[in-house]
Every structure is written in structure tokens, then in C-alpha cells.
Length: 92
Image (cartoon, helix red, strand yellow):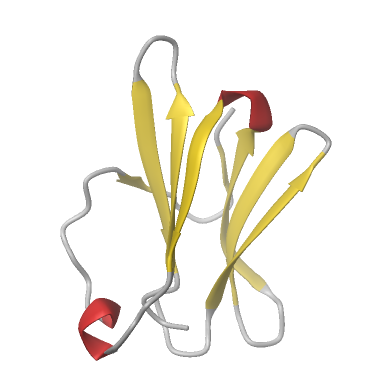
């Protein structure tokens, strides 16, 4: 759903970095998967086609926080504290 977002906090060698993946359009959703030591957070369309994805080493992930959109107010863009994950970016 538009406005759903997932925050990923990773250990970047003594400091923590925050990344966000957000469902940017109506009908899109954010999915989280974990396999073989890699956590993947991706925005997908209704048909399951990935639009953008971020991959993180599971050992480096400190926190993974899901923020569901509650109403139209949450669907509006807001100031970001962390870095927004670009299309198909791998962050290890």
C-alpha cells in the first residue's frame, strides 16, 4: 500500500546508518526476505515485479522496522532521516 515503508539500520563500522524503502505508488507494497545471510527489502508492484531493492548482510543489520501506512496522511512524503535506497542497490 502506498506509504508503507521499512527502515533498515545497519552497523557501518562503528556507526549506524539508516536506509528506507518506501511504497511510492498506489498498489505497491514493501516485502522483506531473508536467505543465506542476506536480508532483501524490496518495493514490488501488484504483479510481484520488483521496482527497487536493497540487499544487506544479515550480520550487519541492527534493526528492521516496518511502518505500515495508516491513512492518507501517512501516504504523503515526509522528511527522511536516513538514506533512501535507490533502484536495485546492493549495500554490503
